[in-house]
Length: 125
Image (tube, rainbow, N blue to C red; front, side):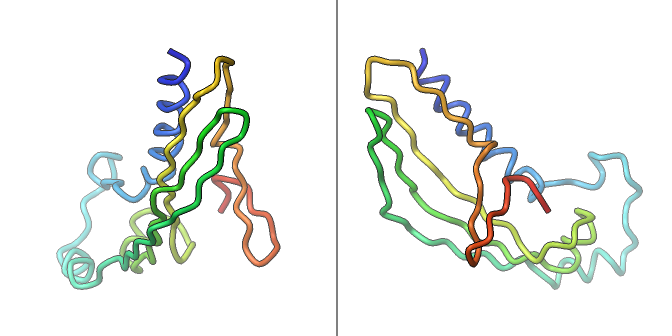
């Protein structure tokens, strides 16, 4: 039961991280864009790159593995529709398994990203 809870919390955290990538303007109640803006967004695509990782760790029975990292450079049309100014987003697919007899809790929404020795909290812009 605890293993399933831990895995589902990991999936939920990653899902919320990437939820903005699939944002739909019509679902949010905003007006539909003009035809020229739709044509421009059809021509300009987001650039995605996938990096397969081999990192793994075992800490007191908590086995963690990074499957792959996705880097997405957002097009101007996507940035406009998502109302953000960031150039891109990162997604990390993590597999976590508790092999110990104890309950272990992890909070992926408290993760930090280190870029050029600068700590960036999860979810910050």
